[in-house]
Amino acid sequence: MAGFGSRLRGSRDAFLKPLVSVGGRPLVSYTISALAEAGIKKINAVVGFESARLSEAVRRLIPPEINVCFVENPDWQKKNGISLLAAARAVTPPFLLTMSDHLFDRAIIDLLTKSADFSQLNLAIDKKLNTIFDLDDAMKVQTCGDRVIAIGKNLPNYDAIDTGLFVCPADIFKYVEKAKQAGDCSLNDGVRLMAADNRVRALDIGDAWWQDVDTPDMLRHAEERMRIVG
Image (cartoon, rainbow, N blue to C red; front, side, top):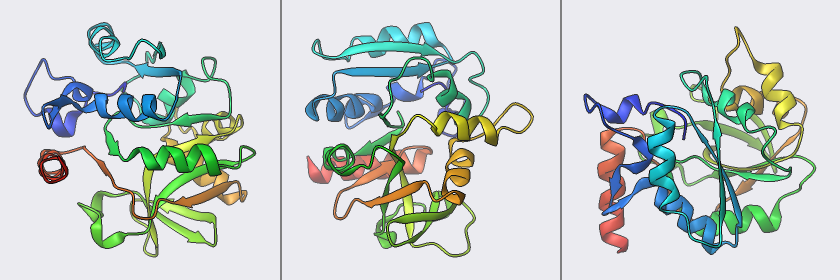
């Protein structure tokens, strides 16, 4: 949760994306609740922009049974691969990796924690392409059996979407470091290198639901879904 949230914030100076209201609750609180319900006992939260203010607010959302550690990313203006690298010394592999701006069913966490192969990178994918809101903006994935063979927003051929939930092995950091160009890289740059080495396994989420909340339209769609389900 280190970034600026520029696509959602508009002109609001005090805006902190993880705290934006969705269905009357802070966006990140849904992730925290899903992790708690799944039995997660420690959260390493990578922060950057307005880190002190955000950490104070998020700490109030953490249930008492969970230990939270806030990891500072001083280069938060860069891509999310740099945020992952900032957490390298804080986590003990294998570890679950989530995004603070994604909503998702707890069933996806259960799938990852119970079915993951801890020797490789496990990516939760969604093959329900006709249900994806703003498909053009989604991170596309091409699979072959249970292998991820290509990933990128502009893939011409794809059969699934990256949900932003992973179970990561220790060498994820090596691949993300290798993917750096001019000191910067995205998480998916590292995933692409791992896929080239046949090191990324795809786990289909089936009927489970998730959504990225990255734009005002995505936020409105998420709130509509919450009203229907709630």
